[in-house]
Image 1 (cartoon, rainbow, N blue to C red):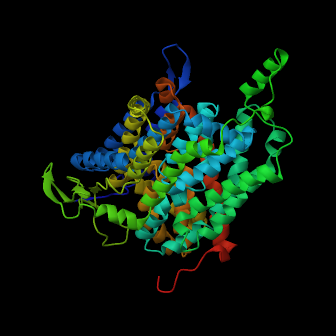
Image 2: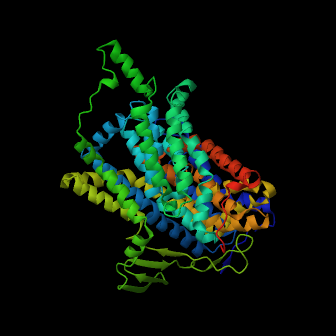
Image 3: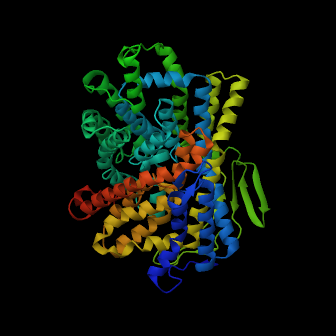
Length: 602
């Protein structure tokens, strides 16, 4: 039994610095290490797979040498993270990119592009519709990087630059994250903290709507500045930004606390936002001036000086309603399948499909048991061999389980893959098109899969070695200011694990224990772990790598884009977590009425 030690050097500050070394190493090689490419061009950061490898190496050294974790246990923890990451994240993104590639090779994506462009020719408003509203729907149905992949690919297809698309979709994928994949983060948070699920959802719904109103303005400002625009051009579209964010926020506030919809908050809010914004732009308001991409503005000037190009508003939409609906059908199938796969009853049904086929064997000397539809492997040298201790958990807590549950039928990625298969049949792909879609997806995803697997393995290694808890404990000495830093603890958890769900599993119990010790409201502090965590989503390496995979076609550009994207979104992430922290601080001491009461007996 390995008992975690949260101060192996007898000095809390030094132990914290050592615990942070894997993160420091990873960040340094991703974003700061001086490097030159084959053409001799100097830039910061090295290739993503190598940066991840150095971070993993540092994590093994810190875990095994400094914190005394047995090497077999460390290897097992890393393997569990990589395996879980494949089934929980990589599988989703692979299937989503497969579906997207199908629409490209069949030409249907061109119709989707045209239909979006004709809602508004203004590029600022396209950012709102795709990155914010449509992305929120995808986050609500499947989560785990899928909205960044799909919405990012859509924007690149519309002509946005790959770097631009990646950054904007990472920024947009914040406010909805707490209810991703049919509320999985909230469900997990309730399970580990012991607090009521709907109450935690309602509390999150009393914090994130303020951010939901802010994000559309944030997106537009970032985009316009990237394109060399002015603040005047940012504020020209404030009515649309307010409509998009305001409609989402209002629905988010009410849906999060209503039992039938609290786990579907993102889906209903995203759909409501898309409908409200589209109707608003169609019948109520449209900007007096149209903002185009810099390349489009330059091309328009050149054409006007020569042949005299027709302005965009004179373009005729050449597709019928039936053709448009047919082109959008794969995306509707995706939303439907993800919604079905997110239903707890459907998950249970799938997990019991082959319940009569029992499995009972060993793998590497450890039990591999269960049923054909839900086998599980007790990770060797790790399952029930790691003991967390106070103050991270209550005294007498059970050892940490480490079972790799292979829910291959009920996994969200399987739902996305089924949607891809159904879409291929509906679109009537030929054998050559099936092959092309498969090969293009495989070529595009081979490097991201390698990076994501390494980073997720690193995250699990920090969890089982206890170094994550050391970093978390550094925030708990804030006293009365702890509500602010509770947001940063959740933010740290998402950065380490790449998932708001995993961050809640990691720090949900610690947040409640700290709240009790400081006599703070437990519902507020525990929920803030999830709402603060959403701001860490944009800087975790696997989310950025998913964005690179979706937005960059060239493998070399994709591999070297991680550092520049990370450096761009870093301060946005830090500032976003501060906003959540300030909201939590105000609700703790000023607007206490915003904190919902727990049901009697909870």
